[in-house]
Figure (cartoon, rainbow, N blue to C red):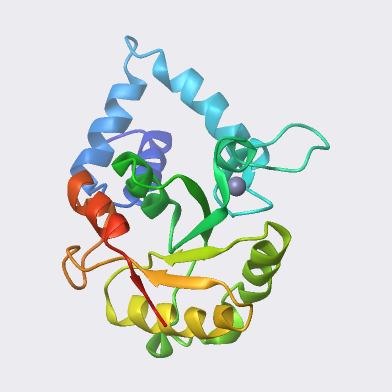
Amino acid sequence: MLPERLRRVIELFALLPGVGEKTAQRFALHLASDASRVAEELGRELSELSSRIRPCARCQNLADVSEGEEAVCAICRDPRRDARLLCIVHRVQDLLAIERSGAMRGRYFVLGRLLSPLDGIGPDQLPVQALLERVRADGVSEVIVATPPSVDGEATALFLARELSALGVRVSRIASGVPHGGDLEFADQVTLGRAIDGRRSMG
Ligand SMILES: [Zn+2]
């Protein structure tokens, strides 16, 4: 019914999180219409995405990168940020959610994954060395562990607290308030702000 090329575009859109078949079809038909000039710009931006956007060399947040330059994100570059306060999150989405709450004046470290024995993700698969290096290099005095309040998130928080305690930094955990098993991404700003402000020492 549809040209092959258009079917392929629909298939690709449908691979994106939260995009079903119908939405994928709507996107593709819109972009293919004469009226849409979005397709051309989207194509250009997407083709450069992987070469121009890289994980930040310091925190793994996403950063713009120019030729021959080390990728350092806007938060790590910002001199007004308190380098002695470091917030550990699972994903970039969580960092963005905490940023929206306005409660974090320090910097971040994005783990990228959580401990998950069922999925075969053990301590060796977490970027622990990079994290410890970051803590030492920046003279971090407090680490806030803001992994999600799920089984994997709690296990990861306990593991990291043990690793970090050897460095003599204060380790705290975001307070409850974010529903158990919940996604930080979907918590409202006030709840998230309170969870950061009401953080508790992990010992
Ligand atoms: Zn960064």
